[in-house]
Image (tube, rainbow, N blue to C red; front, side):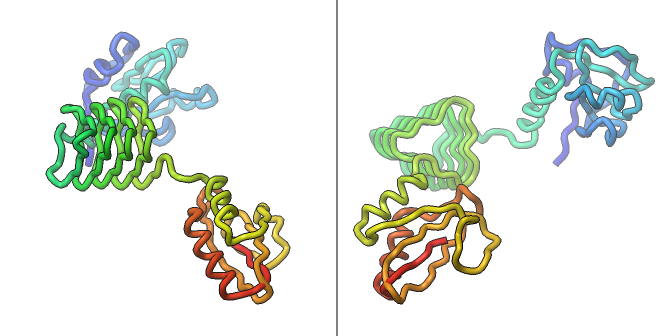
Length: 271
C-alpha cells in the first residue's frame, strides 16, 4: 500500500511549529534518508553529522532544525521545525492511520465478555477475545484472540494486537501498543525456577550462565544452565532458549525434570 500526502497536509500535521521555505507544490509519496531520497520523497536532518548531505539531497521536502542556514533548490521545500525527528514521528503517525485505520468500535459476536466486566462502548473487541470478571476495557482496540484476565485494566488509546494475554490484575496504560503474542503478567524466570525448586522433585540446583558450563558439546543457542543433581543414570535434557530472555515455564521444567528423575538416578542438565 502507498500513501500520498500533499505539502499542505504535512504543514497541517505540524501545525504552528513549521516554517516552510521553498517552492515545491506536488505530493509526497515516500520517506527516505537524505542521501537516498528522490523526487517525491520526504527526508529529515535528525543528526548534525549529516548536515553536509542536505544541500545535495534530492528529496522534495526536508525537515530541518530552525537554526539551519541554507536555501532549498528549485522545486524543493525546507520545513524548519523545532525538532525534525519529532516532526517526522508526527507525520508517520498520520501515515499509519491512513495505511492501517483503527477498526470501528464494537464487540465481535464471537467474543466472550464476563457479565461483571466493563467494556467501553468506544472500545473495539475483536473475534474470539475473552474479557474476564472485573476487567476494565476503556476506549482501546483489542484485535483477535486477546485474553484479558480478571480485574485487569486496559486504558484508553491502547492497541492490543492478536494473540496477546493480559494477566489477572495487570494494567495497560494509555496509548500503549502490545504486539502479537505477548504475555503480560506471567511467571518470570525467577518465579519459574522457584516453582521448580519448591515442587519437591529437586533437592538442590545451581544456575549458571551458559558460557560457564563445563560439560556437554558447545551449542549455538543462548541461555542458562540449570545443573540439577538427580540420579546416576541421568540423561541430558535439552530445552533450547532462543534468547537470554526466553525460558520454559516452571510447570514445563518440572514435568521434564520429574521425567528425568524417574528415568535416571544421578544428574541432569537443563540447557
